[in-house]
Image 1: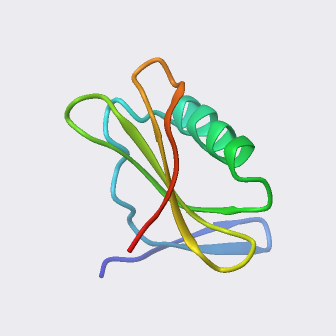
Image 2 (image 1 turned 30 degrees about the vertical axis):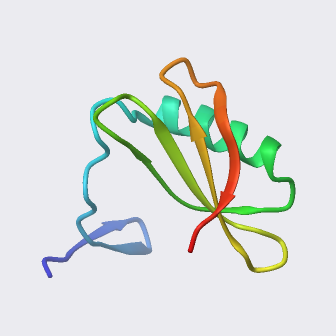
Length: 87
């Protein structure tokens, strides 16, 4: 894996490459998707976000009790599937 180091003043960071977000899942959209998912499942933690070819956003969460949950949002960023436990 490629790594680079950046130094600013006395602080140094090691950077590792990350996979880019899909074009439909910009940082601003990711924040809205995450917020909607967390409103649906209070106390949960976002594991990852994704978008499929139909424009459906999926938030994968870890519930407060440790369960794995999934929330689906449509292209207008409205929750469409509530929550489902991932198997």
